[in-house]
Each structure stands twice: as C-alpha cells, then as structure tokens.
Image 1: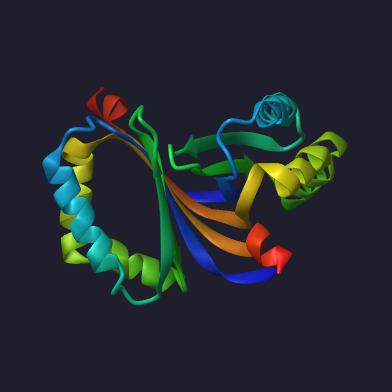
Image 2 (image 1 turned 60 degrees about the vertical axis):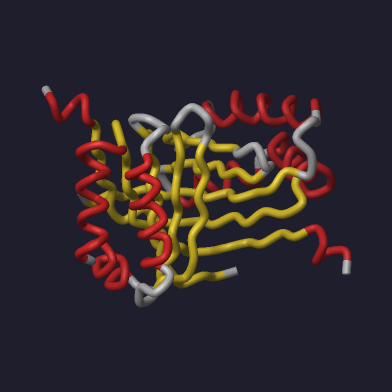
Amino acid sequence: MKANYYSVIFSNERSQLEDSKYHEFSNQMLTLVQHAEGFLGMESYRENSGRGVTISYWETLEAIQKWKENTQHRLAQEYGKAVAYSQFTTRICEVLRAYIFNKKENKQ
Amino acid sequence: MKANYYSVIFSNERSQLEDSKYHEFSNQMLTLVQHAEGFLGMESYRENSGRGVTISYWETLEAIQKWKENTQHRLAQEYGKAVAYSQFTTRICEVLRAYIFNKKENKQ
C-alpha cells in the first residue's frame, strides 16, 4: 500500500563490542528519540561480528533534520565518529510503499 | 550527498532458525539477484532471536518490480509466506541522500 513517511538507514560497524560508554550513549539516545517530534519508530539489529543497522522512521524530513541537530544527539554522533564506529553509512529515504505480512493475523 | 537510487527494506522474523530449505532458497536468491538488472548491492543482518533485515539497493523502481516478478524469486516468496517467516514488512524506498564515514579512509 502507498506510504508517506521517511526512513533513516544507519548501517555501521562497531570498533569494539566492549564499550560501556557506547551503551550509555545508546540508551540515552533510545530514551531521547522516543520523544523527538515526528518520530514514528525504529528497529535495530547487531550481528556478533560487530556489523549492525538501525532503521528509524519519521513523519517528515524536517523531523529528521531536527533530530540530527539535537544537542545531546550531536555529542553521541561525535563519540560515534571518534570512538564507537570504524565505519558507517547513513541513508535518508522516502518510504513509497509498505507491505505487511503477519501469519497470526492472516490466520484469523 | 544527493543520491538517486532505491532501497527495499525487508524486515522479517524467521519461524525457525533450523531450516535447510530456507538456506537453499536463500543461497539461490543470493546468486540470482547479483545478476538481476539494476541491482546495486545488499546488506543483511540476523540476530540470534530470529529477527533480521535484508536491505537491497536498486537503480530504478522498475528493476525492483522485475525482480519481484522473477519466477524463481516468486517460488522463494511463496516459501517465505508459507513456512520460513512468521511475519515480515517490505518497504520500498527512494534514497534521497547518503553519507559515508570510514575511519581508515579519513585517516589517509
């Protein structure tokens, strides 16, 4: 079905998996983003190798920009570049269509 | 920087992680998609819980549609719905902008 929202695909590779400061920032961002204007939701995956991705969903491009500029988020971004990630790619996307399949729901 | 391509975010949950037929289909699709017209690349993550995501990148929406309709891919999709996945969401997106950070390259 037609969709009309935005996504940020943040593909990354952690420098090291043992990093208490990373978890501190990560938990702080997780709490903070829930209250960000226009935030719709997120999903996050991490493999044992250190490779992972976080995909967040947003109502507008302006909401993404505002979150990017959030002061606390900027500190986390700096830490990400300086320490936490050896590499990452951030892609800003427009979600054009979405299809949902749920076996439990389909059986009802 | 500005980008001009498309992505398919396929977020899913495996019904069971032990499934040789799934791996057979998965390997077959991996080989096949590399030769699909307009295919740019993909990244895939799976957590031990069974939750995972595959993100593929494409030159055009037409290329995505053509891959969706590929006969062998359709068989894999049917298996996915009938057996492999308890739920999934497929999102078709336009990539508007992409930023790449690589510590090694930045140090050069």
